[in-house]
Each structure stands twice: as structure tokens, then as C-alpha cells.
View (tube, protein in one colour):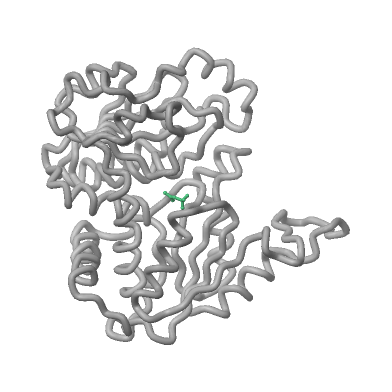
Amino acid sequence: MDLFNDLADFSHEQINELLALAQRLYQHPEPRALEGKVLSLLFLSPSLRTLISFQSAMLRMGGGTFVVSPEMSIHGLESRAGIVMDGSAAEHIREAVPVIASYGDAIGIRAFARRRKLEDDLSDREFLELASLFDTPCINMESAINHPCQSLADWKTLDDLGVPSSGGRLVLSWTWHPQPMPLAVPAATLHMAAMRGMDVTVLRPEGYELPDVVMDKARQAAEASGGSLAETDDRAEAMRDSHVVYVNSWASARHYGNKHSEDKIKSGLRDWRVDDTWFENAAGDCRFMHPLPVRRGVTVTDEVLDGPRSVVIAEAQNRMLVQMAVLHRMLSASQR
Ligand code: CP
């Protein structure tokens, strides 16, 4: 495997093989599998889980990592194309990224959406341009429109919980957030659940419809897997008999890149915060999922987040395990 960028690049069977490898590495650790291997970690956007789960995954298999982020750089990093670099930035990302990649056996890149032009973010322009600058095996650690490591971990969490694929009902719900948030996690989650064969409902207020390209990709995955895709602003209808509510916030496509304009439609939506009442007509053991970090009291009440429905810590733990499988497949001598 030379690129881990999108679960859509893999078959259902290949995903199951990765999840089985993650389970095998958990039950039967291989502390020397990646001995002598180095993973470069380039964080152009912040992280807690992704950073340390990749470091831990490499350490547990005998490899090492180094981390680069703009805050650490003694040179300012410029990323704009066609720029005359007569300001403070002394190094362009077009040289920096291939150099960083050349020091490792694989590279992980995190580059969040710029949230200026919707078309650029939907096409994952920045990540794909960065990944085209080198030949080193590459992992998407969250780009403008994808977060495959989170989605693979969430697939494992659903399996671990025994949530059925066929007939399993997952609600992907928008929640209020003070900032316009990226589309990466909602887009990746929607596709993952549809690919898994679940009946997926997008629950969102008017103005927060997911872009057509995101819905179309998920719809195609659902058609191939025997799942289904629906969309509504009716919370009671969406939550009825649901097995999982996966919560996230995302920017309005109608007001993309214009926080001031989006704030006007968002001002009356603060009640889009998950509390116990959301689960009144859900399945009895309906779970609460969120990729973290989560804003307590804003996105979800303490009662739900600290209660038995919440599986957010398991999701985060699974990040490390599935990334071990991806790294093993990418770098282990036995796999190449
Ligand atoms: N879920 C996730 O990617 O967490 P971080 O942003 O902390 O890496």
C-alpha cells in the first residue's frame, strides 16, 4: 500500500482485512515489525489524537517518527502558489514537503480545509497537490474532505460494539459550534457508514445540507453495499430506532468562507446540542459517537458524554490500532 487517502480506494474485503490485522496486532503484538523504519509526520493543522496515536503506533512496532509543524520551523513556511517571497517566509512548501518526505519511509500529512473556496476543498486540492510532490508512501491524517484514519477507527468501533452493518441505523447529526467547521469528518463518516452497508440518515437544519458531491459519493457506496441514505431536519424521525448517533458540526455550503453571513443563520440553532431527550425514540442501547475534540455543554451535555451511550474514548483508542494496521501494511517487510 503506497497511499492511504480514502476508504473508497479499498474494497469492503480489503477494509475487513485491515481491521483483522488491527485485531491481530492488538492480540499478538509485533514489536519489531517496523524496526528501522521512520514515519515523517507533517502537521500543517493542529492535533492531539492523530499526532500521538501515530507516534505510539510506530513505537509499538519498533519504528520511529519525527514531527514537523509550521510553529516549530525556524523558517517561515510559504504555501501560496506563484508568490514572490519577499516577506517573512523563507521556505516554500514545494521544497519543504519533498525534503521532509525524503527523510522517512512513509509520510503522514494533515492539512485542514482552508475554507475559502468550496470547490477547492471538495476536490481536496491542497492535499493532492502536496502528495504529488514526492513518491514516498503517504497517509492522509485529515485533509479538506477526508479523514480515512478516523473512519477506519470508527468502522472498527461499530464492529466492536456489534452494531449491525446490514440493518444498522446510523444518524449523522449536525450540531451547533461557534466556528464554521470542516467537512472532512462528516463526509468521511457518511461514506464509511454507507460503505459498511448501514441505513444512514443525515440530520441537519435547513442551510446545512451536505454538498451534492458528498451525498452522491455516499449514495453510490450505499447502493453498492445494500445500505441506504436519507436526509432530514426532523430529529424525532431521524432518531427513531437508531443504533448510533454520530455527531459533528460542519460549515454551511451556502455561506462557505463567510462566517459573518453563516452566523446569521446559526444564531437560532443553539438547541442543536445533544442531550438525553434526543434518545427518547432511539434503540435502547443507541450509542453516541464523536471523533473528538468535543466542546462540552455546546455540542453535547455532560450527561450524555459521561454516560453509558458515549463511546468516544473507544473511538480514539481504535485510532492507534487501525493505524498500526495501515503502517504494517505500508512498511512491514512481510507485507511489501
Ligand atoms: N479525531 C482527531 O483527528 O483528533 P485530533 O484532531 O486531536 O487529531
